[in-house]
Image: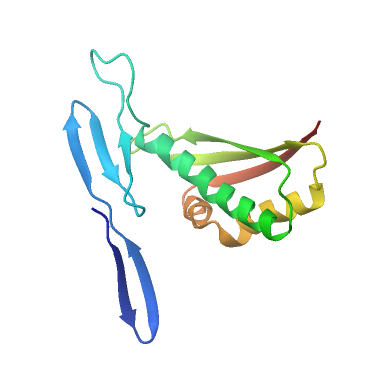
Amino acid sequence: MLFLIEQVTKNNFIMAHKTTTHWKGRMLFESDNPSGNTVLMDTTDDGVVRQQGLSPKAMMLSSLAGCSGIDIVDILKKMKITDYRLQIDVVGELTDDHPKYYHSVDVDYYFSGRHIDEKKCKRAVELSVEKYCGVMEMFRKFANVNTKIHFQTQ
């Protein structure tokens, strides 16, 4: 079970998240998250044909896309923009040496729909990337992050 931990320090609230991860056998782990839901993580193992969950590193890329996507949808909703589709592709390049981590990350935002307001979509991405997405900021601590926006009208 997950708990939201708050500590009071001189009238400031510091929020922290706690997750608990359980080993389920072979290379499979189940972890809870702040919503109380669970997610599976694993990696390839001898004799295993298919993974049941995301690899931990791939989950980091998904977290980046999810964080930024949530920001963008929320910002566009406030701008009264609702008629669009959004896909976010994230590609991370790992270092050659252990411990391997992403040193370069490309984030591509794909907007499609009939009447896309490109200016507002670009502004929403910019606000997410530069101001709101905490996962994006974490990635910047160890990786060069590049973003591109693509539009396809139908």
